[in-house]
Length: 287
Image 1 (tube, rainbow, N blue to C red):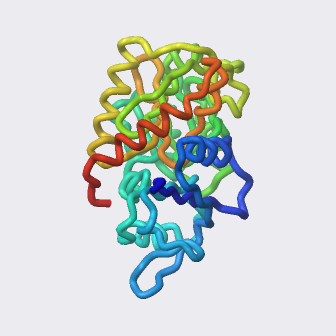
Image 2: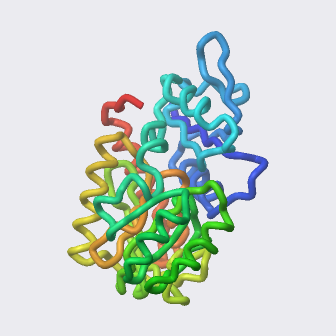
């Protein structure tokens, strides 16, 4: 019997990236039975359902993104207690996604939702990078010049009541970063992302992708992140590194599969599916 996979997506949201197309095709080509349903979950007689589909009846459940903000915590609880095998347990989405969970591997980092806290840091001198803690696609990333506390206030005023991260500027950032994709227990590929504005390497923000593997300093960071993700039971993540520092970890719905396909002139789909099949042989970790 073919394995089965259930992808959860938000039909109300504009798709980001190409995972909603790339992943179902990869698994169909790997002889999996693929079903797609909404993030809107329900409980019937103690079992979690997506539409008419009971989650624990599938070999793998793969949310494409975090879903609507409304009801996020309730949805995570349902997934945690669904008895389904999830690509990433809810603990991964809650504890390891984004910027604030990895400050020990990043340049000197400060974070707050009050602009005055971060302005005090900037007022002591040095160049900094300011970005929303929950931001993506390079949006609202600002380079802060020495002592420019007004720039901090202006940037944070655009997103009141949101947390921002302030990181010491590293010159390597202007040169670009590596994206490495973790699938199951394997890094199935990496590539170089170079900014065209000296700041944002994200491809959605105009960055340029080229073939390349992380150097030894960046690879050490990738290995450290990979070990931590493995301990939490994560099966899919993007790890961005630059200058021997971690830039970000994305476990929600990271892009890069299509880029790997185009850069290497071949399909990574079979590698992805085989990596997932091997990973499914591992015991699950508590969510």
